[in-house]
Image 1 (cartoon, rainbow, N blue to C red):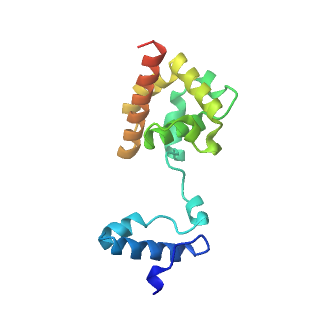
Image 2: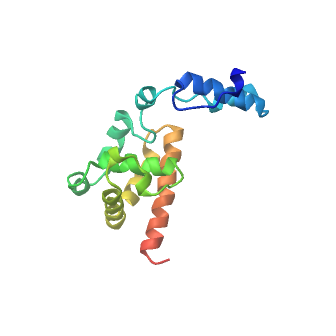
Length: 161
């Protein structure tokens, strides 16, 4: 009879996961697919200990930082690394709007304004042009390519096309 109990917020994470597994099996999903779907963090603490999606590693930042113009690095309103992390986050999440970017990277208004400034001064175009020469992992390279596509859309929009 335990299989028919509803899934509630009072259940532990492991209990909820087990209940979802039972429900998935009853609905006809295979075990392997369910294990993949439910292999995420078991708790908020476990989730927050993971690195942010899209965040540059320190080694990647050391490669990218010299490509950012000094006037951008010294500009007020947030660190350039946060702007790049936010753009990578958007690229990884299908170009979700700035309002969906984690707040730890900056406010949506600030990120939108900074993106527009970086597009207008050509900093992102220069950065994208220099990326092929960097030793980045294949997944990171794909993320930057997605940022390049976002940049092309922004430049076309700015040009009125």
